[in-house]
Each structure stands twice: as structure tokens, then as C-alpha cells.
Image 1 (cartoon, protein in one colour):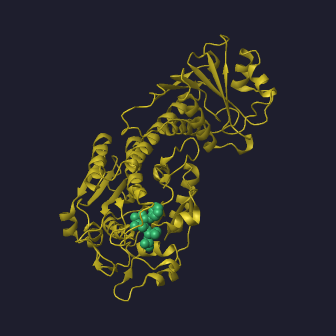
Image 2 (cartoon, helix red, strand yellow):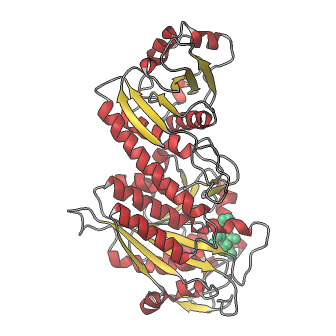
Image 3 (cartoon, protein in one colour):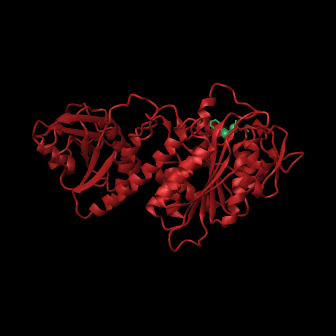
Length: 499
Ligand code: BES
Ligand code: MN
Ligand code: ZN
């Protein structure tokens, strides 16, 4: 759907519906909503007085304007308590409006004010970005495999800004929000795709197609090239699969920044995780198509960073592998030697994410990175600890950890830090090799990060365990429809703009 920006008075705009807002507890609307209320002979005041609408967050009321203004419908969106209102509130309110209007049969196009840019005093560009994000993220659908399509939905949304002064900021914010939402769509699409259609080669092909469109450099290493480099820990995971593994490298190097130390993102891209010989139980296995959610976030982030042409060098890599059991599959008790010569004993073939990342973390050392952030659907345990509210953050560098925490708060894709004490390495010391890939239940969630840290090579590094965040069986707010969330894209774009 297209989002346009125009200067004007929302009450005078002709569209199928206009969207205004109200804070909770306001009895006499002022500002744009107040002017509209007057034009409607007090219809909004009467709505409030009736008690039917209080301005509670996520509530809405649809009014009919009976020819008093050019638009036949007015949607009033509740913003909740003014003192609690923030950018996330803008995102949510815009998402709620878009979702309701998409289901309102007579509405194809609508016009909206920027929630929060008026009385609430939020920065106009940031509020406009949040508006575009919320609107587009709410309308995401996965109907590509259904022959009967749902209604085409909405055609356009026009953002109406009264102040000529703010217009440039509003336009820039909307554009940024559109680019980021599009990149979140990319990640959601990739995660949603079934594993028979999205295997490592296909994932790499789609990433390269995106890179070509956006103007990123891209390289893909196949298994022969990886063998040449000695990436045998990664390759071990691929042994049981008929689908060739791929190592994807995307680079955004804008003019004048070609030689700077890059910020590097590394994604776990297991296109399907059966557990391998340590086979997973049947019940939840289908969800393991989302085990490439880290790679999807990296690909989406690079798309947005490229299109926004952020002024810094950023490299994204993804280890794309399918974890299957067959006669040539790797086994528990195998010992493998990776790119750096470091050895690992396999305890569980289901702890495969840390294995493919071990060689990815070794590979990225060649870039002399300013920082490396890996994203992985690594453990079930992180969801037990944090639920689907925050991703797990592990880092060997306090500045990077703080920058990620802050980017999480600003983007709405929140994180929470876990400890990295040396003692956590004890649980994954192996009798046979340098480390083992599972310390069992008692070894602690942090031992998974300690395994990864063992394969880092001197650079500042953080690991984000996003296992519980990439998928949701229920809607998590209007901007997060059920299914793939695209978690991580907004966070990484925010980080890239901040460090
Ligand atoms: N991809 C899974 C983690 C996962 C589990 C993601 C549930 C999303 C939902 C990962 O490869 C895995 O199997 N982890 C094991 C590790 C264990 C064998 C050390 C786990 O968490 O059980
Ligand atoms: Mn696994
Ligand atoms: Zn996995």
C-alpha cells in the first residue's frame, strides 16, 4: 500500500475515511480533533459524553459525517494516557487504524494525521516513521499459497500534516518507516516460507536478488568453497541434508566508507531444524522452518540499511544450512575442527545453531570488524526465561551491550542481558575436544553463548538469542500479526544508525 504525505487540514481532506485521535480522559477535544469536532457539530464530544469511547489505547470509534465534511467517515483512535504515550503508541495506534479500515468494506483509501506530532510533542520525523511502520506492519499477509485471495484491502493512506514547517520531517519519516517496514516484510516472508521451497540455495538466491535491487555487494560460498576454507564445523551440520549449504555475504559500503571497519551482523540460517540424529519430537517440529529467523533479520536489515544509504560500512553474513538426519549425517560424539583450528565435540546434533555460527564467527574476523552481532534462534530456554517480550542479549563488550539495549528500547524490539561469567565455560568443557556443543540442562543458558564466544576472534561481539521472538502463534499487538514477526530488522537498522 502506498503512503503519501500532503500539507493541509484533515477536516477538509476528501477520502473514504479520515483518522484522528484522542487521549484517554479528554472530554473536550482540542487541536485537529477539536477543529473536526466543531465541523461535525460536536459529534466527537457527544461520543465521549455517551461513555461509549474513552480514548483507551487500541480502542476505536467509527463515525459518519453526514456531509458535514468532505469525507464520509471519521475513525477516532484512542491513544491511551497522555503521560504514557510514546513512539510505540504511535506505531500501535496507526496499526490499529489500518487493521480496522482494511476490514471496513467501503474504505479503499484513507487519510490520517500523525499521531503524537501535535499535542504529545513527539519528534515529527520519528512519529511519522512509527506511523508508516505501524500501518504497513499491521497489513502484512501470507496468502501466496491460497488460491482464493482475500479482499485486495487498502489502496492508499495519505498522511495530512497541517504545519508547513514540519512537512519535510514528516515526509522523511514516512519514507524511512516505509523502507524499514518493507525490510521487515522481507524477513517475515523468508521466515514464513515452507522449508521444501526455501532451502539454503533458495535463501541465498533471494538474498542476492534483493542485494542486486538495492545495490549491495553480495557473495555466496557453496560447500566446496567452505571446505577449502576449513569451515568443517558448519559443514558437519549439513552432512545429513540433500540440500547444499550456503554461506551468504552482503555488504553495504557507501562512498567514502569503503575502508572503514565494518559493523558485522551474522545470522543463523537453518532452513529446517529436525534436530538431525538427535531428532526432535514430532509435536512442534514444523515450527523449525523459522530456524533461519536470524538470517532473515540480517538480510532484511541489510536491505533497509542499503536503501536508506546509512553512512557506515555494514556487512551481513548468514550461515544457511539444513539440519537433517540420514546415513551420512553427523552424529553425537563426532569431533569436528573448524576454520580457526578450534575443535568441538558434538553432544547433540540438535545444538546445531552454535556449530554453524562457530565458523561464521571465525570467518568474519577477516573483515577486522568494529563489532559483530550474531542473531540466532539458538535455544528453547531463552523463551522460558524471557517469554516473547524480549530477546536474550549476551556480550563480551559493555559499550556494544549498552548500544544494543538502547537500540532495542528505541525500535520496540527489546532485549535483556544475560551473564557471561567464565564459570559458564565449565559446563561445556569436553574430555575429548576443546569444547562440547551441549552441557545439558544444568549448564545454564549462558553456556550456549560461551560456546560461541570461544569461536570469536578478538573483536567486540554480542549474541542475540531470538528463538522465542521470530514467530508468534497469536497476534502480539496490531502491528504484529500472528506468524513470522521479522524481529531483529528494526533493531539492527536502529543500531547501525547509532554506532
Ligand atoms: N532451533 C532450536 C532452538 C529452538 C527451540 C528455537 C524452540 C525455537 C523454539 C535449536 O537448534 C535447538 O534445538 N536447541 C536445543 C539445544 C540443546 C540441544 C542444547 C534446545 O534449546 O533445546
Ligand atoms: Mn536444533
Ligand atoms: Zn536450531
